[in-house]
Length: 493
Ligand code: NAD
Image (tube, rainbow, N blue to C red; front, side, top):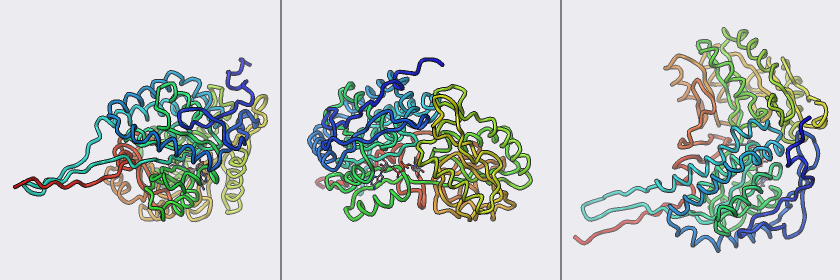
């Protein structure tokens, strides 16, 4: 076996908060063990911070806010581009950390997560140079213009599935628009956020502009949500957590952006380009062990294509290599934690109870050697369940999909739209009129036609119904993090 990369051998690395420009220990001196999902072993400790650490972060942000808000967009852009360049420079170390922390294949962290984190700083840094506001001429001597000011101090809370990717997706637009930030990464995958702290110091980001407080949702997350000086909360995570946050933040009239769970449909019509569809649907089902909010977990297949689809799909799914995330041949790494593995497997039990048939997978995979105690789940395909059972209504967020045949568009739409969620759909057909009808009638914030996860960072990103409130991306994010103020000027006649 080749020597393990450096990070693997650094036992008990201890993470620190990033407050007021310095790396600091949590006030109470308490830590949480951080477990590597591929091995099941503790490999680092993260601050178990509390409200007092959040207070310190908010104080640092408040001190930095006037200078940061007044800074020319060009200077803010330059600083964000410097952070992007440092992410690129340290891409290998960041990718290794992301893979180790999440269990995802190293090649995936290298090709998706880390490049995207750098692009987020690039995209929003340069967006600051182009962001403009409207003006409305009312009459010859009256003009209104919209003055957009930073929302103030922004709270950014992110999940474990795409840690640095989603963390920076929030932080970058908040900073670009002149806000100071108090951010919390998931306590399950905190390492790249810790590394980002050091990169921000190296980039010369002024102290207090970005503060990162590590810890649990119920303590640090709740303290950010409830802090009266934090006027805008951008949250990505589970629907239940989103509801908890809204319950606290709404009566305080905070700005809220909530990107929540999903139960996304993949719709395959019999007239689709089969070869183009089949490999993409394998990817849209199982990328990142199915732990991407955009993965399609309900595969609706038009009945005439059902047998051909099922055979070709199973052949490809069975060929997905479940293995050590550090191995280039691995297609499925570990799921993020023991608790998550148990949750995913409990849904397989539920599917069987509900009358489903497991066509492949359905069990924990035991590897040998370094990964013998890792949290691996075989990619799982289930059939024989109607659209309304719990398996097809509740988010599993793992490598488990169901195949559901359909006969008519009306029946399909009723089934597709039957869940409380409405994040993303992917539709495969060569009939352009049908594609347009589906795009119009599917209750999702994002619809891909004959593709999946083609992302353009300028487009509105987010879900409907229980999948969230508000949109991220492009100008939507820049608007969210700014407060519009209408200024009406009357000139002398
Ligand atoms: P989670 O809701 O458990 O945690 C998300 C973050 O919120 C973590 O940092 C957590 O510590 C924090 N948190 C927990 N309780 C909190 C509270 N009471 N107050 C404030 N913060 C709190 O979600 P997760 O398990 O980390 O992530 C998986 C979920 O995220 C899935 O439901 C997935 O669909 C969703 N997700 C959605 C999108 C999207 O764009 N819509 C993207 C990625 C993931």
